[in-house]
Amino acid sequence: MARPKIALIGAGQIGGTLAHLAAIKELGDIVLFDISEGTPEGKALDIAESGPAEGFDATLKGTQSYADIAGADVCIVTAGVPRKPGMSRDDLLGINLKVMKSVGEGIAKHAPEAFVICITNPLDAMVWALREFSGLPHEKVCGMAGVLDSARFRHFLSLEFGVSMRDVSAFVLGGHGDTMVPLVRYSTVAGIPLPDLIDMGWTTQEKMDAIVQRTRDGGAEIVGLLKTGSAFYAPATSAIEMAEAYLKDQKRVLPCAAHVDGAYGLNGFYVGVPTVIGAGGIERVIEIKMSKDEQAMFDKSVSAVKGLVEACKGIDGSLA
Ligand code: A3D
Image 1 (cartoon, protein in one colour):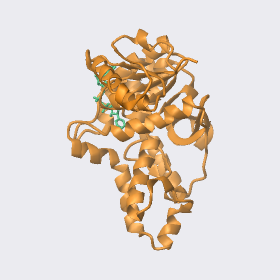
Image 2 (cartoon, protein in one colour):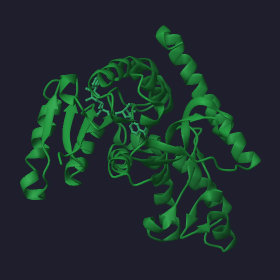
Image 3 (tube, protein in one colour):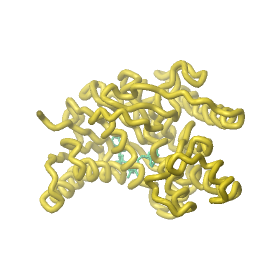
Image 4 (cartoon, protein in one colour):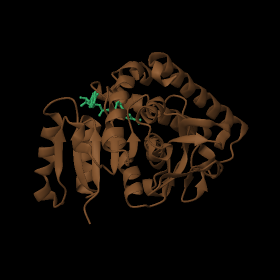
């Protein structure tokens, strides 16, 4: 059987890391697409040359032509501009909306059967726009944010408790950004909910609040340190986890920006929710019960995303 084909649209910091991870994990043959001449070709060749030492079987190709993504099984989109220090994800809106239009059209023409994972910010609005521009089925287009946000939450919690990150599970809902909703009640250490761990004296409410806030600010913390761009290792790893769930029909329960139609009182809207990812793409959106406070945070997050979607419609009349 032929290897799956993975198209990476955008060969910058995340795109290059995605290619490296996909090769090492032997997820398939890889095409790196970017408008910057030489970048995807250079990265593809460099990673291919690591193959003999690493011991993977995968071909890598860099290109400026959408024709080369033909028949891709998975497309991961990072094309666009990342945040600079002091810049919000929303500042990126106008620039990256134009990029989504060209990417959406390229995917629709050459890889209409693909499972598409968008990473470009501002995430929830860009994944909506990418779906609109591409016209692909809603269950085949999603955004990566929740896996990363919950990974950051899990990392901070594991440091606080002195336990393995593998034994910490965390739950993050809502839009990717300052209004994301880390759900403490649904987050656990080996099945023990965080509020119980506070009662058990493992940590305090104040420390938990600080960890929640650090999670919300997780992207900005890295931008502030790097100064020349935004996070790329953890974002790439998170998207690869989603791609693998699709390619191997793993039915993983992963939070991602998915099209929510009916659940959570939403009709036809992209926002971060728990989903099941398998061979059908986003096979299910899981609707959980929220407390009043959680619902209020979620509503705030949804209205922030709605504002961005409306702004997109204002910028590009074809989306209205
Ligand atoms: P960067 O290293 O700048 O790579 C972006 C690449 O896109 C560059 O190589 C550009 O040449 C290329 N590009 C620009 N326009 C086009 C186009 N029209 N067609 C094809 N390629 C194009 O950025 P990065 O890899 O660090 O980040 C990529 C995106 O991911 C940015 O929008 C970030 O804000 C976003 N991001 C999202 C998360 C989430 O959790 C959602 C996390 C980190 C970064």
